[in-house]
Amino acid sequence: MSVAVVAIAALGLTACATGTDTDSPATDSETTAAEETTAAEGGAGGEVGVFTWWADGSEKEGLDALVEVFNEKFPNDTFVNLAVAGGAGTNAKAKLASDLENGNPPDSFQGHAGAELMDYIVKDQILPVNDVIDALGGSSVFPQDLLDRITVEGNIYSVPSNIHRANVVWANPSVLEAAGVTETPADIDAWIADMEKVKASGVETPITIGGTWTQVHLFETILIADLGPDDYAGLFDGSTAWDSDGVKTAVEHFETILGYANNASDGDDWVAPTDAVIDGTAAYNVMGDWAVAQFNSRDQVDGEDYIYFPVPGTDGIFDFLADSFTLPKGAPNEAGAKDWLMTAGSAEGQKAFNLKKGSIPARIDVPADDFPAYQQSAMESFKQDTIASSIAHGAAVPLAWLDDISTATAKFYSSKDGDTYVADLVAAAQKALG
Ligand code: BGC
Image 1: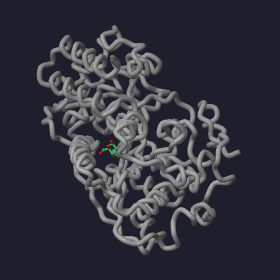
Image 2 (image 1 turned 90 degrees about the vertical axis):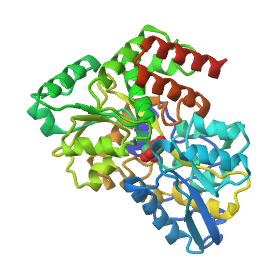
Image 3 (image 1 turned 180 degrees about the vertical axis):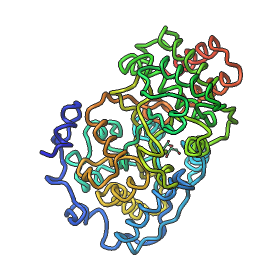
Image 4 (image 1 turned 30 degrees about the horizontal axis):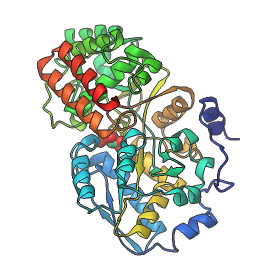
């Protein structure tokens, strides 16, 4: 049993569950018999339209790396890039929803494993892909816990391509040194004290923020810090009240931290706030680990030009999300779509894609030492840490609930009225949970 498998078992995730899966994992060089039956030699042919929000910069580099593997594996197929720009799918998801409703689906689209995927399943907009998952090696190559998040009544509805971590602070060590900040803060209060030091050293905006989705992202990490993983998980099944003391503390912390941040407009994306840390006009940004791809693409050296640590108070917790690819009902080229899914789920595809994307492979059989230091540390954390589900990125709540949380957050961002924010969050949870 590999180290990864042992550690995943320790996490309570079952890496070798029973089922109809093939016996051994596929490797870069091997193709299983089932893979061959799912994907025709050279591919089905025709155009394969794939919808994502990886339209620019390092995200597009990740997509391009995956497309390169697709082109090699399936030369008969022609990849058509249907990406719609906007971090976290802010614009893409609206376009996708109307395309699906109008019976105009792409051949495959990016969807987050977990609650978000359930939206498409409930609306009967995507088809099971058990045959593809089985051909890829099933639960011998994908963690069972991850498969559970994409399974309804025995049917598996997407192919996971990666795992991202959301609760990461990216920081500029020179800015911290100049401010006399020498230690990693243990909790949110200590972190706020450090922001004060950074501000006193002459840095106007110690922390950067973008538009609404990045604010929801920051807030969810503060919720995890202030509630702890169990009470945080309880927010999504009704066992933790959205007006509990922990949530109220998180709202206060959120407001204080926003007081140390730049003023953002709703449409502002994640790259500029990351660049501000690189350029030294800010000390900190909280962002998912797609940010490491931006540091890399700007030739920043890990440990010298930038450092990273879990959002204070969330050490030992991995705030999780996973991108996965679907097979929409009525896909114009269903066989070509399966070629794409076989690529996104292959060991070779996951290595090429994740190296550029900053995430770690969803598969457990891609060797860790093929990856740089940050991703190796994320792999270790994913094995050991308690897993929390991201609100902003589809793991914890369905799209409609996320919309309501986002509206409440945008309102709070302008008003800074904490009582109303809490009341809006309570109302959103009541609407979603009934
Ligand atoms: C996606 C990531 C993406 C990020 C920023 C998240 O929702 O899962 O793949 O890099 O949004 O666009």
